[in-house]
Every structure is written in structure tokens, then in C-alpha cells.
Length: 155
Image (cartoon, rainbow, N blue to C red; front, side, top):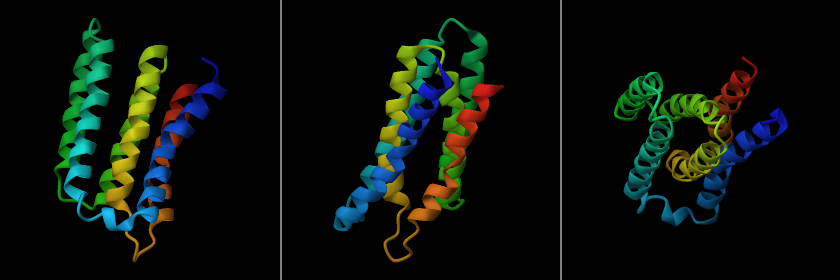
């Protein structure tokens, strides 16, 4: 896969955050009543991201062990008591690594890219605060996804 395709796929996957922020700006009254469902949707999408990675790398034990450790790490981060924005920053950095791991298989890459895009929608709607207008902060903190995924391509 050429770098230009990989780069634009990472940008499009990252746009899930921007689309989520836009949706919250359009319909802010939907943010609070559906907070519980957004949190559940985030966990389901994160589980699907790891399930597809494990399914595609089923024959390689090293990948399975490392992905299981990664999955436990992200679950620990998800259930810790740190700030939501910091959790999102750590999770998106980890998703950048998973994005890189999936690029060699085009089918897996398409699935993972779309799941990361869909993961950004509920994540942004949980993070965005209309009174604080923290949309720039959300984008800046989670930019690690694009940076890490593109730096790993060159290593």
C-alpha cells in the first residue's frame, strides 16, 4: 500500500471525532439523555476492533498474545478514574498502533478504518462540552492517532 493511501485513510478514520462534534453541535439536546448509550456503543466498537484483529491474525500466536495484552490495557484505561479527555488520548494513541497493524491485510484495513471512524462518533459526543467549547482540545489531544499511525508506517 502506498503512503498516500495510508495517510488519507488515517485522516478519514480520524474524522469520526470531527463528525461526532458536528453532530453534537447540531443536536445538543441529544447529548445528555443518550450518554449511557454512547458509552455502551464505544465499548462495543472497541471490542469489535479487537475481535476483528484477533480473527484475522488467528494463526499467529505472537499477535494474539500482544493483542490480548493491548486489549486488557485499554480496558484498564477505560475503567480507570482519570479524565475522559486523557482516556481518549491514550485510547486513540493505541488505536493508531492497531491501525498500523492492520494495514498489510486490505480487508482488515478497511474494517478497522471504518470501525475507528465509527468509534469517534460516540467518543466525541461524550467528550464535547458546549459551555467549555472544547472541540479544539478534543481534536488536538487525539491527534496522536494520526501521528503515531503515520510514524509507524515508516519504521
